[in-house]
Length: 345
Image (cartoon, rainbow, N blue to C red):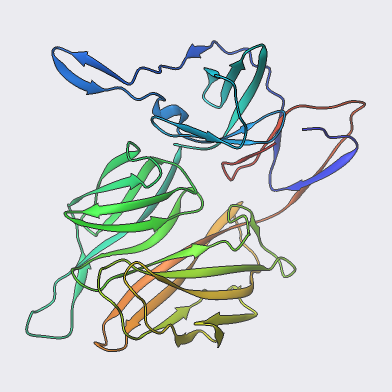
């Protein structure tokens, strides 16, 4: 990263030029080992590496999973050495460079799980929290990235040690529900565990950095709410209703390809397919703390049966932007660390 007499606008930043003096630990690349005659899987890359990293001198991204890595570069037989919780040294042939943690397994999300307690002789169902059960939260990019979570007596849960921005699924018994979260501590809403038709909503960034939303009348954002049919049953006709917090304002909405409002038609949704509610010029006027979450409640209705799914999405708004001027007589290599959990090179 080369910065010469320039300005950076980010929220609550700390500028960090790594001295790279921490003791190095080599990364194990053995695929499997035997222990007392039992075959045990050994990950090629340990969990502390999983997620997204930024190369300090170019800004290119690397992604590590349990047994592979991905990058837009073409490294020549790279060797990796962990230098600290947030720094990896990469050596290839006679070249060395460093990766800094951007999105790693230090995030969390929370939500609730409800189950169908319907009377089989009635078309009206009663959903209640599935307290006391265990759920499995697994990464769709890396099946080894899996955590078992205990749901409390009210049906609430928190999954920890996961990667912000990755796609996960929650499994209860033999039912799996895909979930998405953009930033740590996010409330992903309600996971409904039912047989037959089912839905889950999530936020689409539409190019917005969902970790860096700011308050203020002049800060507006275009986002989407995705409504996914997570079942193998076709929904012939559906509609939605949004309930906004008092300090959230929007300019306009579109759904099913037409201009809409806080209530509208989604139409039919095939198994595994999604319909999007497009929100334009969304803004939050102010927050008190450094950052706060705002929840948009959502009702999805099957217009044929009259069944309603209650869900929500959460948006994280940061209070203020800060300005820093960096003056240098030459190139500066470093990382800008922001409280969102992402590093910007």
